[in-house]
View (cartoon, helix red, strand yellow):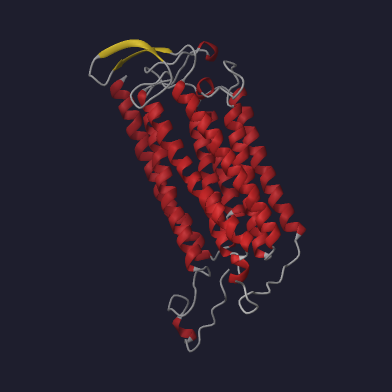
Length: 109
Length: 258
């Protein structure tokens, strides 16, 4: 049972409407970017240009989710870099595996 | 939320990494959640890069889209595969259902960030309200995915004529309906295998997220966090939930758009 002793009297801070507005604004941006992806999926011809646009928009959305929703931008700089910098390895992974995939394509077809 | 550590008896000459303070200004739990998420980013990135590598090793479907037929000779067009929606049997509505799923997951991420924000303000009713919305979003997303899988496995009315090596090692030509790990009516066997593995692994993460959300919802509702004095658990589960959304953004692009 919660006794008076361990029942903390946490002070409720009133809503900061500006902060909440910013959250909904970010949500709006994410939904608009997704709608643009849909629009392009049905209007532009399939090809490398379209794929590059899709990947660019996706990374843009990822940036919003990580910085605004996960508040990574507000963390201490060393924490921020220890999350972001290791992702450089993915660049190598993508280049190596795409090369591998297209070589398999050349041999197979 | 970490308390600012004013280390007693620690010389200022020691510097920020000399111990006695919190260089990263985050609690142990939050740090470990971030590093777990970093390792999970690598797991999903490996899955999606493998998808891309296998995809470029097949020719893409090049003909006009309205006469598309599934074949294991080329990679299918996603709009032609994912075109079903509940209650509209046999109607071609490309990508609408997966668009709805994306919308649900993004909205549940928004309600989650509102719950975290309410937690910073120690506002118990708001935390409970927004966590309940997030929980609902997560469960709805999982239900949609269950339908999506069920449709993918059972397939279309027409199926596709496939020539493939069956599990007895014989080459067979027959009409294939739906998908399993050996053959599917949409494209090469790897297409369905990757679909099951990647969306399955993501769905598994969502399932764990729903359990964690329920835990946070229950504990916030009965006042555990209020007695504890802070709502950091909501923040940590929030990080995980946003990550699930982040992964879906990438899965959506690679599976359904490209």
